[in-house]
Length: 139
Image (cartoon, rainbow, N blue to C red; front, side, top):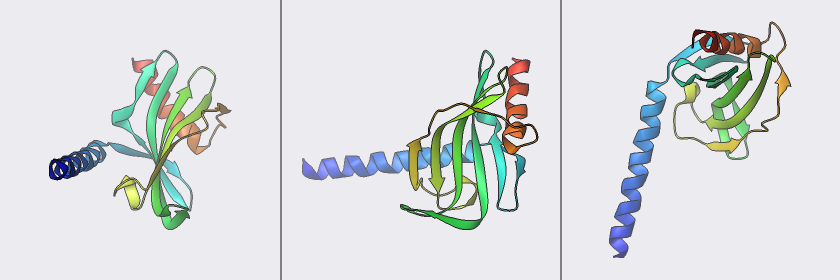
């Protein structure tokens, strides 16, 4: 019975690993800005609209390796929500990846603050919000 349990856990792990890679491969990253330190993208396949609020995954792809206690990373994704009528945003979840463009197994994942903040005109958040809210107006 013990051998069966180990085989089952290995199979489930391989399935989840393949599922994560398939989900990343399905991402449609559109560049929306950045700085001299990173490029910023929006996953067009994850945009969800509920009234004037839009939820989507964003990506920061860093030019230089950075570090957190769990190890070095080159990119992170943030599930964000934008309130198009109030011009506010809030992070919902963050994932850190060892390789660029959200590649490799997730190094660390955690819920974000969930606190709303004003979107500053001309900022990267503003560029993301324009993409997200354009979808809200189409729906």
